[in-house]
Image (tube, rainbow, N blue to C red; front, side, top):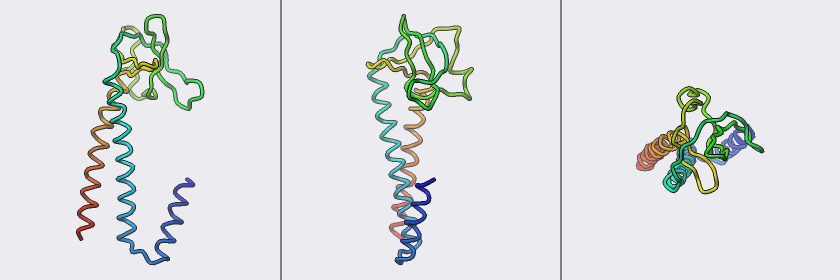
Amino acid sequence: MEYLIALLVVLVILVLVGVSLFDIGLLLLCLLDLLCLAMFCFFAFSLVRLFTCKRVKARFKEIAKKENSRFKVAWYIIGSEVASTIFPAEFFGKRLFYKRSEDIGVLLTKKGGVFDLNAILAIALGFVFSFGMFAVILYFVAVLIKL
């Protein structure tokens, strides 16, 4: 909330200084595009991490909070070890992603984290959509600059 108030104060100051609303809108679009680029970089990094993982069989254990974390994650039993997922657990698709009765394939990182089906889908869709949003907003910025 504080960020929105600070942004609003900056926008009011820009208007008072004499910056046009068109330029302020263009600036906001550029900031939004930078956010999309940051998201794309995050998902690209996560995608590279997926390709460096080892595929193993695991059995779902539970959904619980990690120490020092705000979000609940899925915990899997891999051999005699217990490992948690890197991404937060999905609560809307519990029946689809977390089945206790069968072993499933997960990707194990070198540090012991797990990428499950939820994380793989989130990374793949996030990669595609963040790149798409970045490209669309960049196109609109380019068109607006030519005006």
